[in-house]
Image (cartoon, rainbow, N blue to C red; front, top):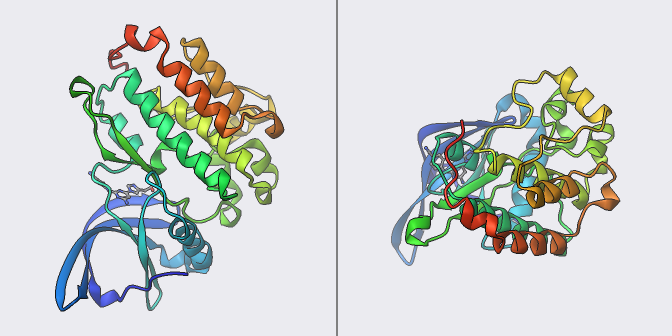
Length: 287
Ligand SMILES: N#Cc1ccc(Nc2nc(N)cc(-n3cnc(CCO)c3)n2)cc1
């Protein structure tokens, strides 16, 4: 179910950082068809050799993204295996991960943030219709393809990245460190990963977007993070009550009570039309 790409057709350029058990590089792939050579800019996601036993899960994540296509889902060109190296070849998304983009202090408007949240909700709705669980929704996995410029009225465009190695393959500490994105029931038993878990993560991700990419519970150690769930705590609410309500509905400890994707989209639509948006056209950058 995969396009296998020859290692010799790939070229590595600069390193761009790392994910869980993976390293990412800018690169290019060369294809030849009808006798013409095509060079495409790509993102090369390499599974760390020490974790090569996770290669099935790594490729499972990639195949999830290549079985279906949607405008807000990352395009995966294929995979390449070379000796102990496992490489996923993805489309290169121009502005990279949203968490870093927001941290760079771009002051973006409330309508920009709502637009991004709505695009993520529509990707989630699509996955839900296909009965596919993502399992790692967060701004690190939300890629910015177009910056959008609210003064020019052009809107941002985001793509949801692959979930990476499944949470079922990660150690307890890695899962604990994903608090508050990982749903509480997944902490108890990672096999509990369901669509409802993606809604919890969606809530934490919207919280990040409206807090300029600052990670929630930033700097908390694993013990404190664990206690956050044990005492059924919620993230600090936004002063925009309707937004805070949506986030807390998604981050409902009882998974069955979390809203449907359709309800999430409906609530986002009413937020977009509320006068709060006009009043807070461009938030002052609060770092
Ligand atoms: N400066 C800069 C810059 C960096 C990266 C990109 N592009 C891109 N394209 C992708 N397909 C995936 C990612 N990516 C980024 N972080 C992760 C890890 C979490 O998934 C994945 N970045 C563009 C500009």
